[in-house]
Length: 142
Ligand code: SF4
Image 1 (cartoon, rainbow, N blue to C red):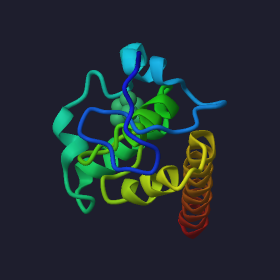
Image 2 (cartoon, rainbow, N blue to C red):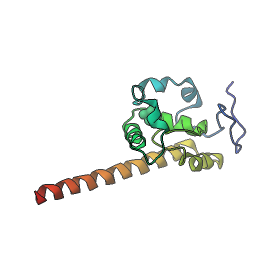
Image 3 (tube, helix red, strand yellow):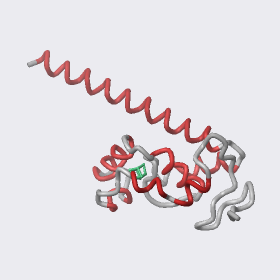
Image 4 (cartoon, rainbow, N blue to C red):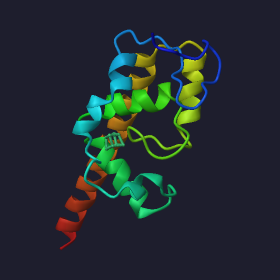
């Protein structure tokens, strides 16, 4: 039997929140943690994931998360277990309470995951086109 906290309540540390997992990684998958074997951060300096958002290390960690093959599982685990510290799935500790609150209000996990991952993709695409434009401008100015 899997122990979860009551729907709508804040989970105790290490106790998963009761959420709708339909279409999202199951609680069993998240709890077993085998997805961690494919984590892009596995060989990096852990401290980068626990630095202040204004630091270069924070930005590097978020960029590594952006291309991590298990980002969806990592983000799901951080939300279901209401992780209070560090970057998980590319989200900061500052950003996640709002996402956890949506789950507590009954929003299915898949909706929250899709919302975050789509928003991050749009942001990455905007950054990439800004960078291409600025490279082209530099090239034509040379
Ligand atoms: S999403 Fe980021 S924090 Fe999560 S496993 Fe991947 S690299 Fe590590």
